[in-house]
Image 1 (cartoon, rainbow, N blue to C red):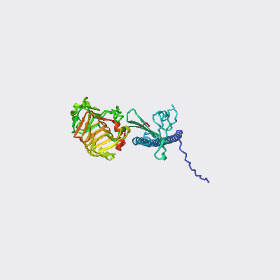
Image 2 (cartoon, one colour):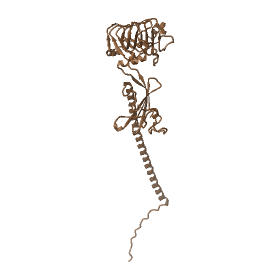
Image 3 (cartoon, helix red, strand yellow):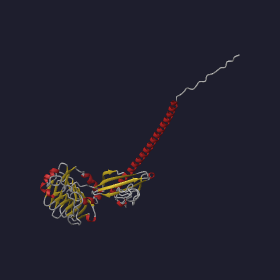
Image 4 (tube, rainbow, N blue to C red):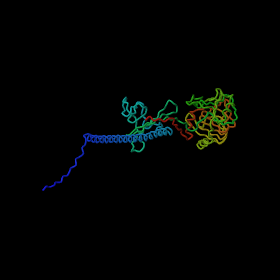
Amino acid sequence: MIRKIACFAVPRPPRTSPGVGRNQAYILILAVLVLAVLAAMAAAFTTIVVKNARQSTFYGRRLELRRYAEAGVDLALYELKNKVNGSDGNIGTESWTDANDLGKDGLANTHDEGEGNGMPGPGEANTVPASIGPSSLGIGLLVRTSDTEWSEIKRIDACAYNTDAMTNVQAYAKAQPAGITPLGAAYIEGGTKWGLSGSSTIRGTDTNPPTTLTGGDGGPGPMPAIPAIATSIGYETTFQTQLASRASYITGAQDDAAGTASVDQFTKPDFDTQYNQLVPKATRILNAGSYSSVTWGDWTTNDYQITYCKGNLSVSSGRIAGILLVEGTFTMNGPVRMVGMVLAKSSVVFTGGSGGKIYGSLWTKAPVDYKMSGDASVIYSSKAMAAISGLTGLTGSYLILHWGFPK
């Protein structure tokens, strides 16, 4: 008997060429390389993001420090204006000098941060930084104020810093005078009737007051000349025509043809507001009338006063120092010396021959007559105007001319 045996065919794997295996290996390697490149790019991107975040934080902190440095400039100006904390505008740098400008390490010729920049900074000798802002920020502030080659202009250098960053701010500020600023040696409204004769003068060239009660001019003052006569807009040409024959006696700042009277026009100032602010501050109140041998203050002893007269006032001799307020006509008809400012609501009559002079400025609101004769004089004096600034109750200010950000 023949038995049948079942046979099953086992499938063979397909044959592959030797190149297929190598391709798969290449693909695997390529995949690994791509992943490596992607990982590297991700790492680089992360690094850039972190770096940018740190940079953003750094500049944000520097910007914050800059605001504190700018506040340091404001604090310096406050000291200068209000005469407090030494009145010098220095904060933590009272003893600092250019010789201390050696940078953070305090050593010469190492060229480290801050060396030779002309400004006080952290680590330099003779600095005592003030704390500013929240204590958690640990910010130190240094401010130095110094004179410049320009009169009345201060240079202010402020440095704010902590462990994260440092910033410098620089400003130039010009002092603005306190109280009443004279536009001319005399301010005279238009429509007045002139009566000038003799050697009487109105001078806008800055002149110091006498050093004694009876002496002559004290010498040239420090400020530029101002117009001899200031008036409101529309009257300059009229005044120059009316005063043509007296041009050599009315001298000062000149913006017109040589040989003409020194007259300039301005927007009409507010006489009443300034006058009314001063009346309540008067320490001497007079009835209308005539006075002689007066002693209303003494400029040689820095005794300046505000005197107020309720009507017409006539003074024939004596001395006056300060601010004189006259409700009516002001007459000076003898050897009177005044240092300061006169504000008169009506006419002015000066009869000379005895050396009557006003050093400072004269302001008339609505004069019907303006008469001067003999050797009577009205002479601009910046020193006199500065001396009376304290009487007004006003303080000077500072105008920022330039901001700089060295770092």
